[in-house]
Image (cartoon, rainbow, N blue to C red; front, side, top):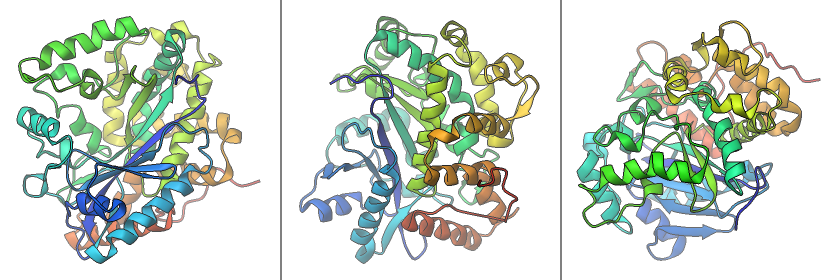
Length: 416
């Protein structure tokens, strides 16, 4: 069934399984799914939420079980599933870890591919790309699926999504640390994402999708080059172009949706879904052409947008945007840091966001992205013990569905 713009949504959240005692990676998603289902399966329906495996044996995904129109209660629903997973994992001395990257994982040592259903596909990926890197085995994200009904709606949605992608890491970066060290990037997940498929660059492109605004053009300019590039590797023809397309937003014509993939996982579902709601409301404004016409939205080349994105991956909300034509899209007329763009957009749409999610967004806008709050808590040269202490607290935030707070900050957005 096809839906119209903003009629329904699909949300996916990925979590890593770690041992409670020391947060070491524990590749037992198969045991979790078996405990829940009674026998091993790659997908378990749990009412409105579905659980499933991922490429690696230590990552579990929970997602809406089909499209939903109810985002207001989705954060609580995901939180209930987090607590159920943690309860099932308790006697295995294991729990879920939030954020987009494990701060101490050594992928060379800790990565284990999923060995069950779809394992043939994952094994092929491993042969081509070597999935032991951080870009494959230490990246947890939220995906948002947004529907479109036909080519006209795809054009409007794709144009709007492309414009917003460059600054999304400024709202949601949560991956500053790899192997016990600050990477130099607040969104290290997206930094490695850019190059983890360098063997076949057609798959990721420039992360920002090309200027394609119809199904026909998308197949010709994106899917066709991907299919041709993968042929020498996929001799058994088992890979699908929807699965292979790794841009920061991908068109899923098989389900009439655009899937946004540049969003780092947060500390709790309340924060994840709040970000999703905020992005949806901003996209509604762009699609409506209140800020800028569709034709002007379509003019932006992926190279121009990538330049902005590349800087935001590094410094997140503190990145300075100097591109005046881009800033003019948001009615800004001088260089500003990314958080000022998000604050301006928030003031425009906040009345359409329920109070629970407003609280979460205001923490991010006042105290910084989760990466910024993590780095403040860790200090300049943290020990492994300090890193575990901070990430154990993040685990408690996940269990209790609450925001990770750092130093008291004078709020910008006061309650009335």
